[in-house]
Image (tube, rainbow, N blue to C red):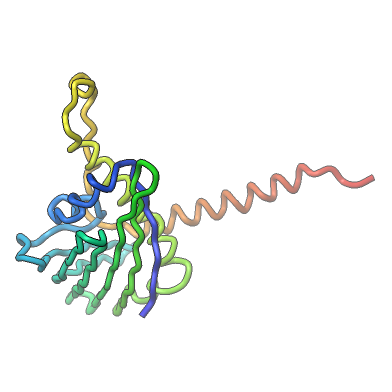
Length: 203
């Protein structure tokens, strides 16, 4: 079962971040491709995740559980879903800790997951790690925008423009993420060669 570790940071105090993480209806909108299929029942969550990679499109529908410990500011998510069309199945166990860091908040994540079917080839190696890095960064940006949009109104904020959370894409387009990875790799490759080419030859 592959394991990923991720860290994200937001510029809001933990006292603001922790309650929002327990609001599934709000948090789900921060995750690209994710949506609820019906209202939450106690700690049970029902949702789906839409993923597209080139010609391959998958919609994983399933359910999971969310438990949160207010005393330790930690939580656990267990989830699984299937896509009958592609005969694919996904399962994940996520543990997270919400920590104070200066005036902001750091969230440490550990994800154990299993992916079978046509997308299984992307569940190992550097590809899935880079996709996770970019997905986590986008989630952090959306979460921060959501916190800003729901900030308490103050006298100074009355005339300030309202910051809205970015719209959630209809699906997680892994193809776009892979293309961005390739461009970054090429930029680094040719950038390094350019620097080497500028070095003067020894006399």
